[in-house]
Image 1 (cartoon, one colour):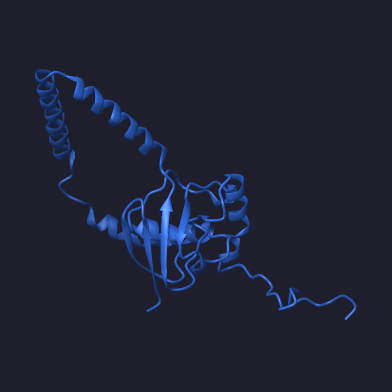
Image 2 (cartoon, rainbow, N blue to C red):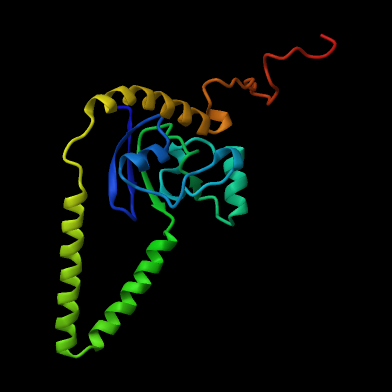
Length: 201
């Protein structure tokens, strides 16, 4: 079996991922979402992850990855999901960075809960009825606005084109060291690059 077991602790998502896949692809497959879209060319990333277990199963950090992690003030346990490639089988445990929005929502929830607890019983009942009415209204609005038919033919025609664009986008987003169209001279055991003619030879 040429798979690694990957677990995203914060989200409680886990499963088998093929060796050769990136942790960023595994995150998408398991429904783990980051705060934004990475822009590799500008070295702008939102996919910082902490490797709790299995760091030895991953590719060596790329130059761009090292630069970003260092500038973000993170330690060596942190990687970029779009750069970290699974190279060996085993178990990998990942902790994603807590989203700012999630932290703010948690604070708002705690504040609302405290306010609700301080309300007298009749006010609590009124608030519950108001919330139920809002939920019912949103549900009816969603059902009313949902399309009843899907343009299957158009979707089929666009699927192949979209797949090609997605493949090209993924290849362009890969680290320079991992691109299939790039070739880097291999290094010998002494650290010298092979495939190059020495001066004066």
